[in-house]
Length: 133
Image (cartoon, rainbow, N blue to C red; front, side):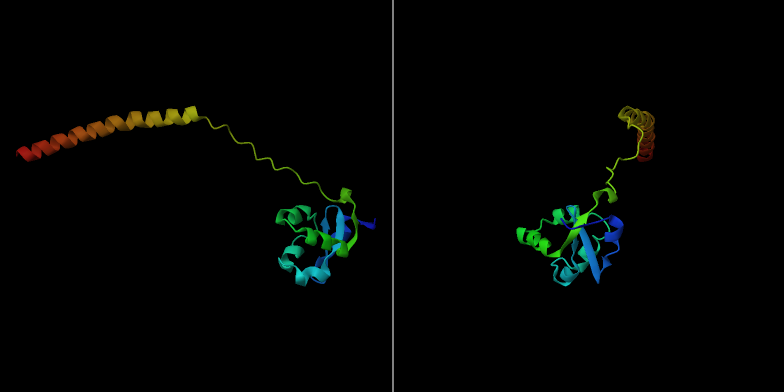
C-alpha cells in the first residue's frame, strides 16, 4: 500500500504539467500519459479534483488500459475526504389531477359547442337568405 492522500492534496495536481486522478480508491499520476491518451488530455484534466471512477468505468476501458494504471500508481485516497454523491431528488410538485383537466375541457366544450351551432345556424340562414334574393 502506498502513501495515503486526501482529496485536497490530490486536487492540487490539476493541470497539464501535473495531473493526478482518483480511480477506485487509488491515486494515479497520469501526467506522462496525457499526450498519449486516446481520448485527449482534456478528458483526463476534467476528471481531476474528484473521484473519477465513474468516468473511467463509463468509457469501458480495456484490460490493457486497466493494467497500464499500475505504472502511474502513487498511493491511496483517504475516502473520508471525498464527498459522497447525493442522490438527486426532484423538487416536490403539485399532484397532477387529470380530473380537473378533464373538467376544464368539458366546460370549454359546453361553451364552444353551442356557440358553433349558433354560428352555423346564423350563417346558414344568412346564406339561404342571400341565395333566394
